[in-house]
Length: 167
Ligand code: FES
Ligand code: FES
Image 1 (cartoon, helix red, strand yellow):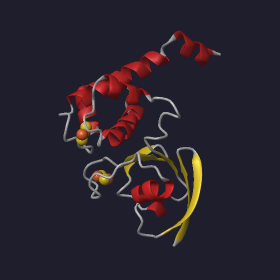
Image 2 (cartoon, protein in one colour):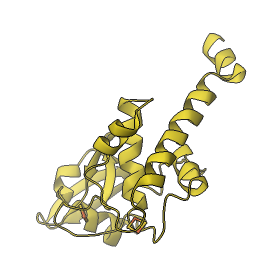
Image 3 (spheres, protein in one colour):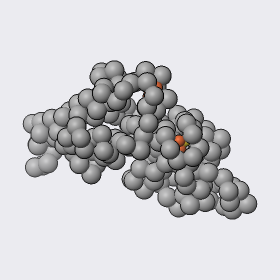
Image 4 (cartoon, rainbow, N blue to C red):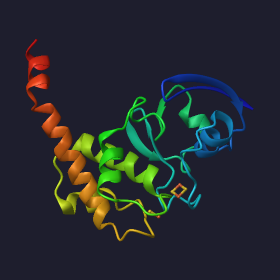
């Protein structure tokens, strides 16, 4: 067993784990973050995507011991207790059917928008190519990410945001 300390969605956890334990199993079975699903366990589907120190990773491709001393954000923490703009946009744009891919899609899209706040449709498709959806045909997922990008830009250019930036 190896002792690790990981901050998950703002809360610090210290646990003794098997060196072979995958991060996704640690998050789900030890920490209880079952909002992060397992779709394939072979790094293909992206359903298990979380952020590690702000970067999106497939948590089935990371060992829990590799997450020692890092900060993990899951779909359960991305909105800080409120709806994240991407969560609202996925709901409004009907970007999910069964919803199994949705947590990973949103976590990957958040990382994409962090790097490119105004992506084109093709850039969104390229950015999410590691995340598979077997229900939607992707069209509404792309629309949702565009919608979230627009709403984030609108929020940043609002009078309140500008007042905050200049105060
Ligand atoms: Fe991790 Fe599919 S469960 S990529
Ligand atoms: Fe079912 Fe994407 S909504 S897999």
